[in-house]
Length: 513
Picture 1: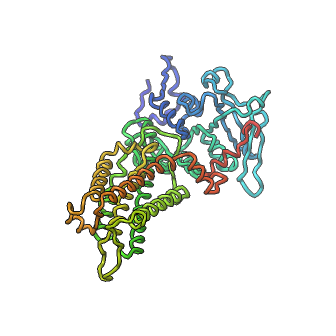
Picture 2 (picture 1 turned 60 degrees about the vertical axis):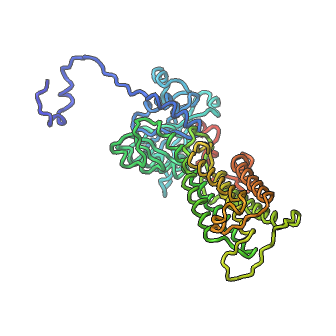
Picture 3 (picture 1 turned 180 degrees about the vertical axis):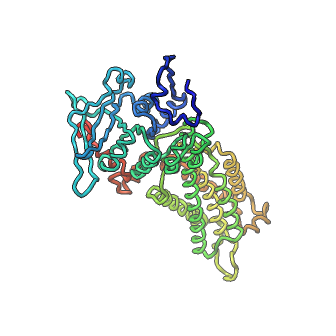
């Protein structure tokens, strides 16, 4: 024993402590993967979501864990990127850790050693330090490595040198790197920022104080601890594992889809009202005050409140939702709906005025009193009725379900409101005028005395609702429609920088430079 006060233990020399000892045994500590980790990684990879490990642990330990949980595929070669700073410049070499076999076996057999035989030195230019190096793996038969999938791994020291001096290699490292080990807190945050600069949407999951910078820098930071990391991250999981990650993504996609649906509905609601008012101006009348109030409150505001109650779809799919409001896709959809709105309102008015049917009870509206604010007439009633069902049809069609939200039939408040509004408006169409005289006078409506005409309008209404629902559900969500949109966008190259980087990587890089 050593007789020393506890506050002086940090000043004791190591040789003084490690002497005259008796070997009692070895303590081996193992930090196993949580059972939820591998299935979650598999779900993310199946959804075409890239997973990257950023850790402060030893690189070989991190690679072993990455293979075990599936971040590095079994058939992928793990290639360690090593950067050394010398007086001659920055030296880049690649170390082949294995060809898809178990890392522990490779370490025991001595195969996890540098295999680069023709690495090159790249001295910095006289006027700049921003230069780069590219090495290649030398072997007796390097051609056998061509087109073999691989994942890059790197430690914090080499990463810092690559960021500072090898700006041409850095993008390739970022898009092909799977494990970043021995990373300091600042390097973690810098890596997240670098990935964002390449166009990635970055989510960060961490549980320690050293993850705070990266959690704050990421687009979506998820803390697995309620301690220091929870202060910096916008999301905190009460469950200390990564099962929350797919849930956050699914909730985010559902929220984004809901926001776009509500935006389209509000835009088309305003345009529908504008189209109705324009047609009635041509006729010589307009919508009444209570008609505007009924549309704004009962058919717009309340529908918007319940359209977003669909929960997220329980399956994480590969297809990503629309990411921009100001896009050709959104514009084309709105234009198609505008054409249908105008077409069916004009068709309803034509059904009333056309000499083909020659309704004996119909008398065209003529302005007799210019001081009368909103004259009651059949033209006003027909356009108002048709527009009401167009609002209902748009709400149904734009309440998108799978693959990002649960089906519409799971949204019970929305279905209840839909049924009530359909019943009320159908009742106003089919009910004879003498049944609801006070309500009709209050709303400024003059219904037709002919049941045949009212049924015809109702059939026209249901044709519109069925058409817009089929268009939104099947046609506008189809692969063919998206291909047409791509043609209209004249898109020849991807917008995200990381896709350009991936396309620039040759089939033999980094094996042959």
